[in-house]
Length: 139
Image 1 (cartoon, rainbow, N blue to C red):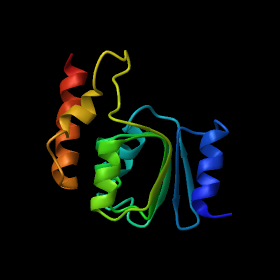
Image 2: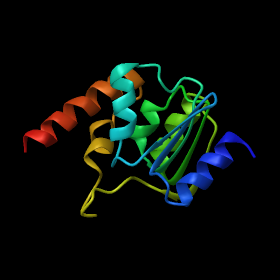
Image 3: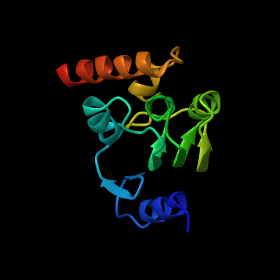
Image 4: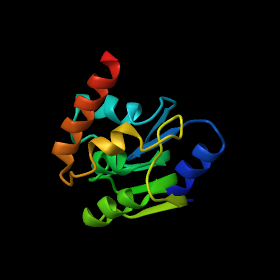
């Protein structure tokens, strides 16, 4: 079984919302949204280089954060996320493809996906995500 198959199995079993393999190291995360990804990237901007990641939802924001991963799976993945992963030549697969990731109340676009709508550079994306998170936390 490949690392991605293992990660997908762990994700679908409900053991985690985000499964990360870095070499032989296995990380299981249950934070919401891109929180687990940001936690690691705040410590090391290259944390996901070569990693295999499976997550419940992969939107454009998450895809920018995972632009140097070895492989990505999303139970739900936006078309804009697929475009980013294609651009950075990251192999991916998904369970369900959607045009965009909705916000939690399903009344519009996810605020983080919206924050990176016109961004294609991962570093700019990280900064835009951080700014939007700070803005949302002030509210």
